Image (cartoon, rainbow, N blue to C red; front, side, top):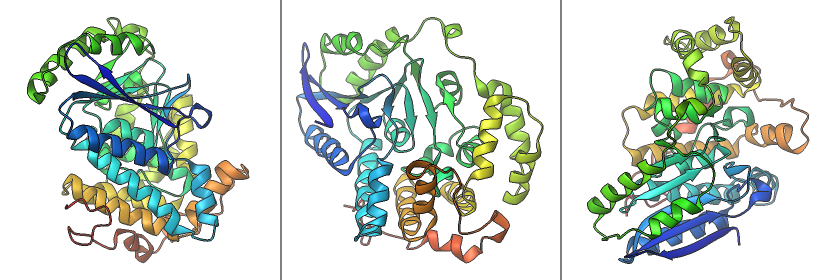
Length: 368
């Protein structure tokens, strides 16, 4: 079973436990997994027995590496093409929006790789716990997509232009970075979830959200690692001034040029610049505009905007080509539709922000 659904009895009340159980693909999300999670959440939202939700992943390597890119590629190159792929994204967006607004406390326990759709899932949880081995990133720039599943919302809430930097470079954050900028709430001392789950089961949950939230917050604080010096050193502590300085300005081409020509000597920085240099030029413009537009948007409208962007990405050639080059043929030489960002016509970028859906036309039915 790709998602294990359990209801754990507590002293009073129950914990709804969702375990992503596909370690062979780093718990990458398929449409069936997404539908299973959402249907479980919908059932538990109205079940007075269920007081707390916990989401975690199995395997040593990953909470969730994102969507299943191999399946996405097969959809994009098959008979149904964008329509089949769009169905997966639509369900994923419905799930993440449901999580953001879920009426009961949701605890996400993140370990190992947490990227793309995995970070979208994790960021939508009310309590975000990380183990010391966690690595967080939004690397969609490298395959011709953009940071999606609500990234316009959570990247915009990072300090300064860090959200823009993460989107353009696919920068990998460790647990210390995530805590530093608010992408996570608590660092756990290790990856052993059983002790935490056992403690949750030993509690008395009332079913009253405010009371359970307070009790849960107090309980989780007991599991927080007592020694932050034992966690990996922060990349951002070394580079956040460079990021703020180089990402300042009103011209995307100038910002990218500043980043690529800056003399910053670290392996982490060079890995970021490699992604930026080899990334899709259209994606760079999408990241620039999605973050600017989302500043004035509600969460609902952010999700609608991003899903419209997804639809256009599925129709254009860059995403298929990016997946081919990075993950199918692995030649690491994608032939993007435009050579550089200065060659991308504004009309191509603008097409990604249409249609503008409302409560009546929204394919996710978020207005219902």
